[in-house]
Length: 360
Length: 254
Picture (cartoon, chains in turn cyan, orange):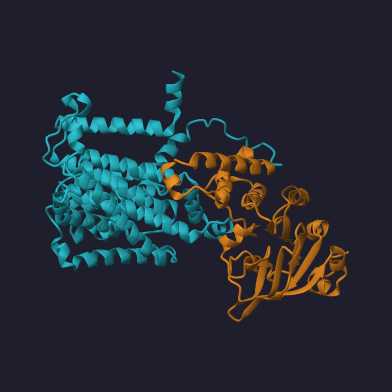
């Protein structure tokens, strides 16, 4: 009994438990056809957006480097996934390098009842290809982030925003002009290997990794860069290194999200990864609150659901969208999660240090 | 010799802010730097710590040429500083301010940071223990979870010194540590500074306008005027130096 109690106090265990419950609830709802196809896609893009928002928050919110290039890194991941799935996967599977799990009749291992079959199916089809393309997409995007970050991160504020915007567009325009990548029409017909389950799992891993890094010495170094660069240098922090590190990690997860996107929506094309996508993600981060992981998740949920509901009214979509934005800026300038602080104000704080105490 | 500068010069365009300054500081010394406003004292600090690049001349620290090093590399070699206008990480907690300064001596890699596996737990515990022990020296451990900018002014000054100490320096540079303090606080600060030197085996160089503090605790004083070193010596020698009196002290010295 003591042991289980101790286990429940472990942060990672509680997080794992929560994510597991979330997964089961979602899978059950889908199993019993609670959602129609549109909402399943919305849920998948919701988790993709969570990945995008938390990873951008690492760059913008935690390290304080204003980046508008997230769609560019997402494009690198998306196109990597597309090329891998359409041009390489068939021959790689034929050659036996990637084991095929597609069209294999599944049997539950260890004599588990068939009730669990949908879970296994959710992971299995194309799972290996998906894993490959997520990793490769992430790595290539990270590489791009590293290469772009080195020269750009010498700039500050508005200049950095413009430079990253420019690089994002350069990446997109490069894809637009490569015939091998389908030019303007992009690459359609990517198999939908992503499932709700895989989207949730990848999102959980992302949130876990980024909230971990933020609470490590490396994350604190990034916070120091945001707070005061000169002070950070004089306590021995290599500020350039941590800016590039944050940029690279952020780009990695943006690439992963791009690959996930490609395997969710069957296609990639240059117009998906335009500046508007970067701004969309930025809105999630700012709405949720810069420098708050929970805020990024809340922002992603809000923006995705708002978009989903408004998709029926395309003519007023942008109007409502901007009204919500303006209201948010007026009433919650620090982001959604300030709601929590609002409530905290009415709660008596335990162990609040006595201000009247002598200060030496 | 712990610190030695040779013909240290800094020009901002046509303005020579610091001109051919030669300083020597021995291990364990408590040295002071004084001079009228705009004499270039803070610029010398910025040059020493690598915050601004040197125009010409050289700086040697602990046997190494650090003239061209960047600020974080200089800190890694064992030189820490505070700022004239306090530069804390304002929105972070008191504890985090110190933990950030412990970064220099933390060894676990990015992988351990991402996964919280490996050496993460052990080293984080070490960092926290070290940070708390430094905070308790400055009577700040009770305030560990407060946001730095919410601290009273005196506590912010102490926190900045604590943060500098967390990098395990050999040489501590204090830029006007008593600025904005009342006489009583200044007295306490004097005691703290000499106590720190003995406890942490430090060498200290400080800039100060408060003559009582400088004359009271410094063993050697450098006087800067218009970017040039016009005098150096013991407090008694400086008090009697005619150029110093002309340039800076005027009639105030009794």
